[in-house]
Image 1 (cartoon, rainbow, N blue to C red):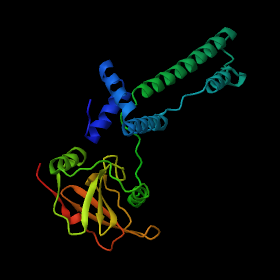
Image 2: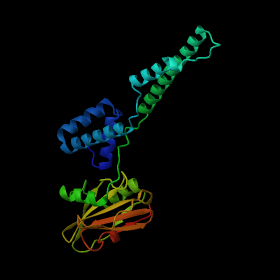
Image 3: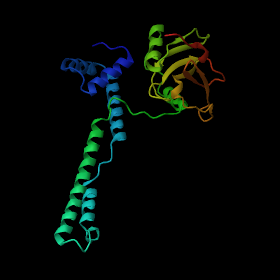
Image 4: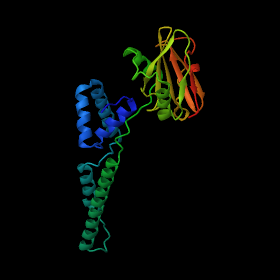
Length: 258
């Protein structure tokens, strides 16, 4: 089962984790996991993302102590109906009805919680916005390697159609500049696409996302000695994070008609 496209790899792993594969497909993928450390690492990452989502959305379930406390409160003398016109049997009847009402309410809460838990979409990984300069710093620290090498114009454009809704074309870059590939580190949204480049032997990253996902970034990080240049056009927002004094890649990215 050859899989080359990174997004297809993620979709395949999610289908595996969600139990949406046939036995033959599962066996084929598990054989590949034994032979591909990169695929096994991606599977582990997706499992952790799903577990993070479950923890994030886990609803609070009332404990037995909470229910017992509610029952005890209704059984206490202070909570009993004290109307002197009622007989002892009448008061006991009302008290019994209160106990039943509390028990029914607790059952309904537990049923709602169970319904919410079943309907959490485990396919949507947990996401948290992060400063782009921090993602740049992590990429450099980890060797500044892209998620995958993408130099075919059609695949390059198709990546941005899928993730940002607009195809992009990378025009000729200036001498001393080259594009290394694409990565999906997040940042503005879980669909943020990063382009890794080298400009005059310096690592440069351009983060691309939809305008609606924009989270305005500081223009400079003095601690990391980085500058952040922003452009907004064609329904997209672009951030170039660089140690250089001026942007060198933004002008090379052109949105084309689908």
